[in-house]
Each structure stands twice: as C-alpha cells, then as structure tokens.
Length: 54
Image (cartoon, rainbow, N blue to C red):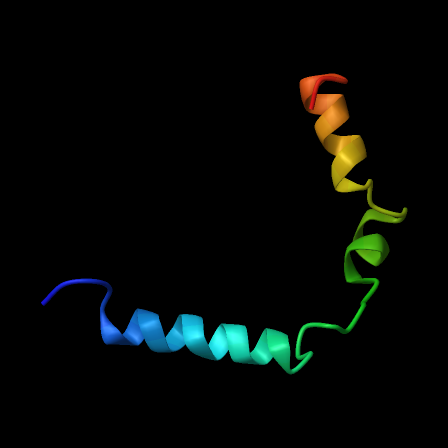
C-alpha cells in the first residue's frame, strides 16, 4: 500500500468539501474577547517577529 491512509484521505476530502460549502466562513470574536483587544494582523505579527524583510 502506498500513499496516505484512507482515513487521512477522507478527512482531507471532507475538510475541503466543508471549506467549499462555506462551513468556515463564520467570524467570531472569541480571541478578541479573551485578549481584551483586537488581535494583530498576520502581517503585523510577522513584521514584529522577523523585521520588515518578509
């Protein structure tokens, strides 16, 4: 047998189908509520960690 186990293939396929169906489109404020502030953008975080050369 080669490749990935059938369970992983089905999981990946189901995940892709859910994304296509918009299952992950909901926006929630859980992280903001926990932090007590808006989270930083990924770009701002990466610039902070790695400098301006990203």
